[in-house]
Amino acid sequence: MPSKSIITASLTPELTAMIAAKVAAGRYRSASEVVRAALRLLDDHERRNESRSRTPAARSRDAA
Image 1 (cartoon, one colour):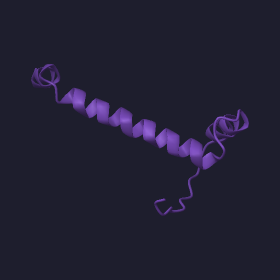
Image 2 (cartoon, rainbow, N blue to C red):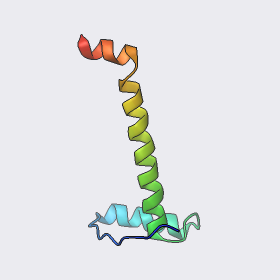
Image 3 (tube, rainbow, N blue to C red):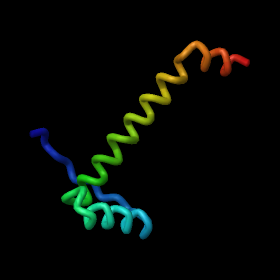
Image 4 (cartoon, rainbow, N blue to C red):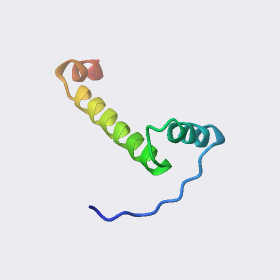
């Protein structure tokens, strides 16, 4: 198992409640699991956006 780092983040009450609701629903065992899942989704989303911007159609739109 990879080593883990501890990061402290300030969240809005709405985000805190959202995380708590996900854990309470039983889908995740901890707030850390929710955040890890969210970061994986963000990474996937950004990768998809990067590959779309590299398509010929996207390049021609950018050049216009």
